[in-house]
Amino acid sequence: MPAEVKLECIGKMEFKERLSLRCTAKAERSLVDSQKIEFNKGRFWGNNRYLGLDLNNKYDVTKHLKDKTEALELMKYLKKVGVFKNLTISFGGSVTDNEQFMTDDG
Image (tube, rainbow, N blue to C red):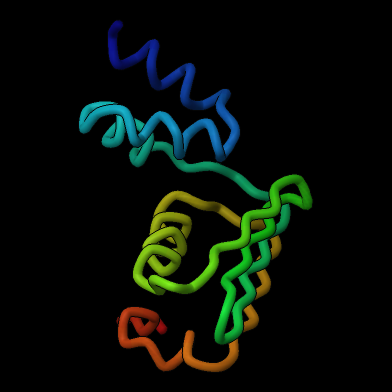
């Protein structure tokens, strides 16, 4: 299937569908990652045990922080492709002590 058709399909996908598609192959991952996705509302929250992500009051994703790296990778991905009208970030405990949490842009 031509990339233009795939991009048109990706543009109509919801967030979870895009996450699934980007796991199928490198080519699809690149296509998915090249497309921005708009969110009306986003909320990242965390404490010593959990990382939560609420998007558009539609999704509720909670990550158990056995492996902080995986949770922080999801945040980096959303920072890269997400366009938020309203975004709230609230962290405490060891999440903010993680070096991977810190970036050049704060």
